[in-house]
Image 1 (cartoon, rainbow, N blue to C red):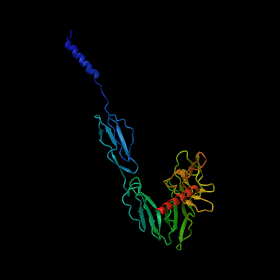
Image 2 (cartoon, rainbow, N blue to C red; image 1 turned 120 degrees about the horizontal axis):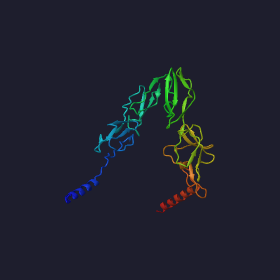
Image 3 (spheres, rainbow, N blue to C red; image 1 turned 45 degrees about the horizontal axis):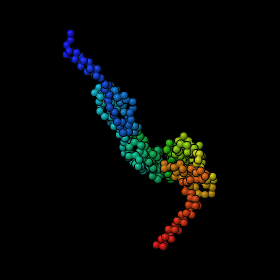
Image 4 (cartoon, rainbow, N blue to C red; image 1 turned 120 degrees about the vertical axis):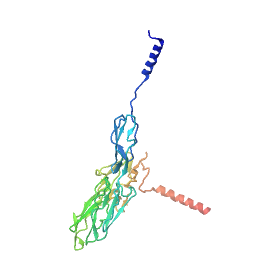
Length: 325
């Protein structure tokens, strides 16, 4: 018969065996690198991978895949880093000038743009704007070719010109058409330099007007293209939501004139609107109406006669106080 010591040992062993539990080993969270992203959805289980990739225009340093080891550690221990690509110095353009605006993008980095213009007596052959691409290479560099004709009008002034090509004394022009700038080609297909003169001067790229997005349920615009451009010469066809009315009067309209949105009034000077720039406020098109049906505010610079009289009274009062002193 087993002794008491045997039974006590058996009970203790049974207790400890029943309390032993096995937990699955997992790896911890790995921060996503700046300017990068996780390519897969990791489970953090042993033997699985987490894969990182860099955003377009950024170059990876380090291994893209991390393995979760049986000890709960990643191999390698850290995620890769992502560095913006550098296209290097653009260099000079013979018989031309270059300009690079580095207000928003670091010089020669991905997304930076070099603007090229030619000296008098030369015409641009290629793109007027050259971009640093996501692969770290500049787009094709244009050249400045000599011509016996005077500078073609508007060639270096319009931001809507994508590129020009000069071949066999003929000047061709291509307009920009993207989600930032849109141009419409007008005039002749090309202009030819004959006896030191262009045979026509009507070729041009006319800018369309970019109309920004409006908050939901505020303003409905009916005549924009897929990139929200209002064509040159067109009048903005829009309507205001319930409880709002148009800020412009019935005899006024908003028209696109070569990239500028303008309030057009009969027999009056047109007013160029800045509201279609990035600092746009939708109340400049539609005003809220109070319960009495009157406008609450107007952001187009129209002051009521009452407010003008009030200002005059206040000015006179201040003047009397100053004289008395």
